Length: 140
Image 1 (cartoon, rainbow, N blue to C red):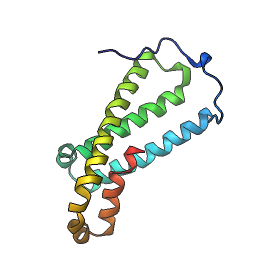
Image 2: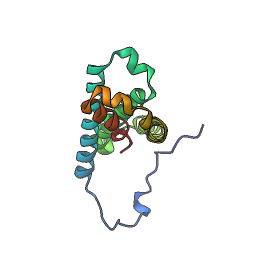
Image 3: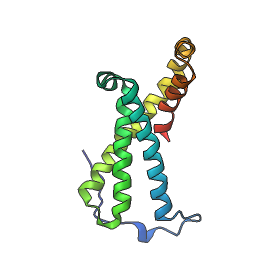
Image 4: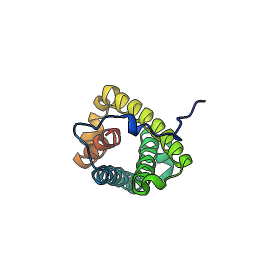
């Protein structure tokens, strides 16, 4: 297994981007996404049991995405003080959550969404909104 080498920075060789986003704005974006995922995680805990949360790949994916966003925001907050092992862990966690979210989003919207229409009518609009957000927000 080849891990990314975080011992050398290549930032000095890159030209200045045309539309640079400041470090603080990126941190705010990461914290906003973390908050959205955390709210989905908390709501899932409220409406389902822990057993259900470990049964569905969607729930596992949201939890891993929340952990990845938390670690990413923590590293962004720490800046250059973050250790290389933390950066490697973040990279691995990001790759895992991104792969899971692509799979979850494609399977849900291509296959499962239409089959859940009768349940949406039975459960109501709040449930429908929750399920739609659950299968969209973590992919952002």
